[in-house]
Image (cartoon, rainbow, N blue to C red; front, side):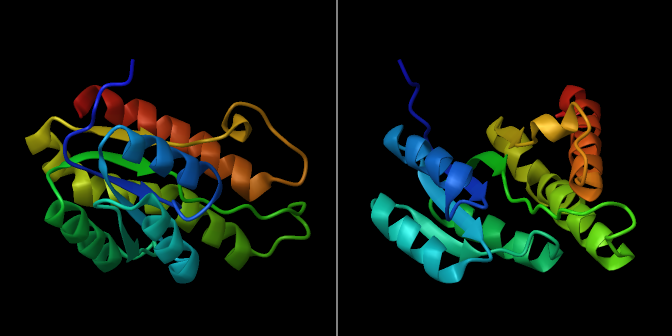
Length: 168
């Protein structure tokens, strides 16, 4: 039996893949889903397909002002009950092949973006006794050749999540 979600849930990277599947499941429980993504056309269509109170908002997870706007959109359809930090990117290449900019970009999106989401939504989630779900990867448990930046970001995300969990 699935418990109904009363209020809004913000799903990053919700336009496709895992994020879209999560958004669909949440909408089926009655949550007012806000899909937040940089893929504007796909996100708008995904929200339309969900119907009801579903919304789309543009969100670059590395931009704190975008996070604040996304929170405002979520709270416009109900108290924020959950943040699903799902947005992420993958870069493939050995340490020698990747340049510093690409390495740092992966860390910005996958780690700093998640931190920003927790930072900005934390007060609203405390008020509503809400939850944060940070989506990681098996790459956060074991190393994979050619995934240095991605693996580092997911190992760090696990550490961040474990560190924050007892306090939230």
